[in-house]
Length: 119
Image (cartoon, rainbow, N blue to C red; front, side, top):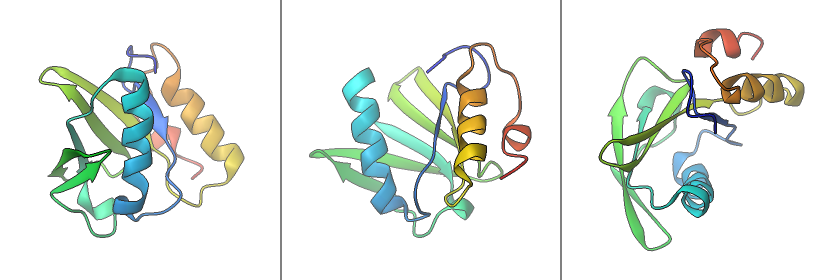
């Protein structure tokens, strides 16, 4: 994760089933960065978005917003937020790799739409 620029990294879920995909993301981020307490996402990009999900015996709150289906906000603390580019499931591996590398580049200020142009 770069922590400098528009995005702090990227996520390429395998499906639009949030309840299936989100636990692995929370587990991976939690192992490297500490406890995740909340995620924010655009509900139109996912199938069946709950208000919360339990991961590793911890409840993670899910905030809903609209207008940015290519991002997910991850909160570790009250003022510690990460913004991840979401590469759509089914994206060609080369295209996904390019978008994720661009999002993770330190100082990158390319909008999600441009990073995902070929998706």
